[in-house]
Length: 554
View 1 (cartoon, rainbow, N blue to C red):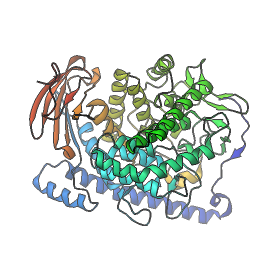
View 2: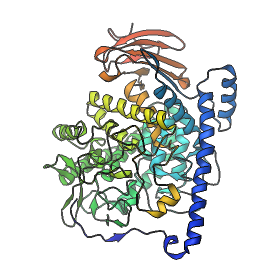
View 3: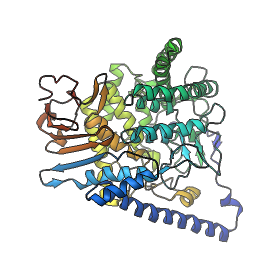
């Protein structure tokens, strides 16, 4: 990273400077005891719920139904069974169920924070967070789409004027926003729910989201048409090397820094608003959003692409200088379809390079070979939300083999780590299935007191996106104009495994074996039964109204 003047210092918590050492120690002990209590209670609840959700006995069925009713959920959670030649793969099977258990426990009924059901990322985070909610909805949509909608609407309902807030809390107030991904997430819900239901949702959400978009244009757009964060905390990746040091003692003044991540999120928001406008019959507005997205992609390529490195970087519009930090944010324009095919191929070269982003658990927040890499939050560990975004970008460009392999190993890393620790975590070690060597803003005493020195546990949260990757990227569940279908894409390393996915909301069970060359063979069971054998990426209809194509369904 280039040497830059540091125009803004992080605000250290006043408690560290103004209270006596005795009071400081008492507060620290109280905070630690509070974390310990949350850890024990949540862990017990999750252990019980995992056993119930796996439905091994009739009594579990009735208990689970009663428990789900406490949060007004009528549908049982999706289930996954994975086995190899020697038997059940407990890490995947139990891990998938445990994600759903934690997801349920982190769901809040309407309360003082929101009149809607809403999600907290983990027990330690007692607030409604903007971009967390956008990703959490993508986990809920395969279980209970209505909950996914309410999780998003809680963010919209909690807006401050036109601004969607960084977080909504009973005891604190944020003056920032966060990555603007609510419109993108809502658009994705529209891909799987009935048109009438989705039309009702966007009829409520479109105008507030449109107002938020205009607010971002007025408050965050730079003179060159790109976008800048007001503060590192708005980005969600606040202690990344691109912003400053790990403990946040010094944070860069970001107000003149054109950001590839925010600019890419704005493209996604334009695309989503265009889709909503079309569904609402607002063709002129849809065309305007599509044109805005096109112009913004052009500006991203013109100003943020570094031909020397083959990556996108932050750039100071005052000096023209790149901030060359090889971080996962350098890859996010792929998600927004900004690069041309040549540029996309250069990004993929970085993604599949074992010395950069192709690690054991893949897609670290900073490339392994970057000098600033360290196992501290956004300075190296793997975060599932941004890894998911890169995989989505690969799929968008047709790099399905790479996307499949990365998705499989990302899921494997999270499920294996769960098998070792019994917990889901905020972030993961890119080179080991353990969290023993990970740190959380090491040197920041206030963060150590309030959230601990290691990754926050029970984080589901966007860590639950591993379940979404299984459903969408590996098994390939999607909806066509003729009904539900699957498009299995498994990497070579999955050969010999059996995957059995149950989707109660569609009353379907998909049972498949991965054969050599990515071929899958199996059966779909529901109101009917159908066997199939399919090549890598072939589409298999899941309803009897669809015609079975030769070579795909038997």
